Amino acid sequence: MGVLGLFPFSGSASAAETIASPTAKVEPTRPEKLKIIVTGGHPGDPEYGCGGTIARYSDGGHDVLMLYLNQGDPQETRSRPASPVRKAEALRAAEILGARTAFAGQIDAHAVIDAEHTEAFHSQIAAEHPDVVFTHWPIDNHADHRAMSILVYDAWRRMGKSFALYYYEVSNGEDTVQFSPTHYVDIGKTEERKRQACFAHTSQSPERYYRVQEAVTHLRGLDCGYRQAESFIHHIQSPSGWLPGGR
Ligand SMILES: [Zn+2]
Image 1 (cartoon, helix red, strand yellow):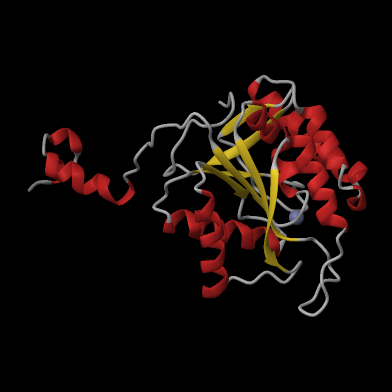
Image 2 (cartoon, protein in one colour; image 1 turned 180 degrees about the vertical axis):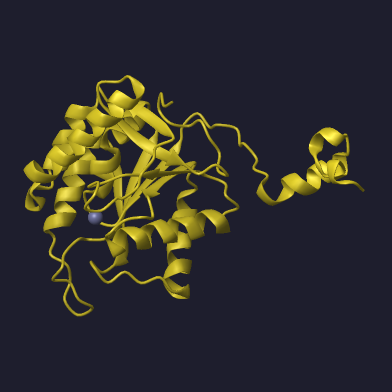
């Protein structure tokens, strides 16, 4: 077979199938009620990166779970439980956004990615049967964020790439680096609730960090023609089109 015979337009169905198979994706039928998981290293990450989008999903009647890798307490050790402060703040934020919360049981600043933790995390994700999962963009200066991104990626592969996978940005420059969005969600009508959810994390200097995130959503708004927008990178091999009013 000549070189041209390798291309789909050659009319060779078998050659086209051979080329397509390694990355072929199946677009599942969209359920009426979506199950969304927004993962983050710490309480506050999903809210800062995706709070406006989370509120849009919950307003639309969809089920949203904010899943945190740890409880964000630097004093926590194997023998010393985490302070309940940040868990309580997360619950308050979730109430504002109409979401649920869950924790993956790891320890702040001591993220572990080994066979045992990878399996446990995969089981936790699989039990939720998500249609869409959001996670940290993997180029990030915080090891807990990178760990969460890797754990999600592994679960996505193990589950046959069955859910839509989106990456979000948080604390740009300090945490997320080199983020180039592919998709945008208008948060003009939900930004106030996002702000309240972020400020529910009162122990984490929200007046400082929200200013950064607000500048980012204004910048992303300029990109796409909205007043404020959250932006995402969609994994090209995952199902697409399930963002709330996204483009
Ligand atoms: Zn974080």
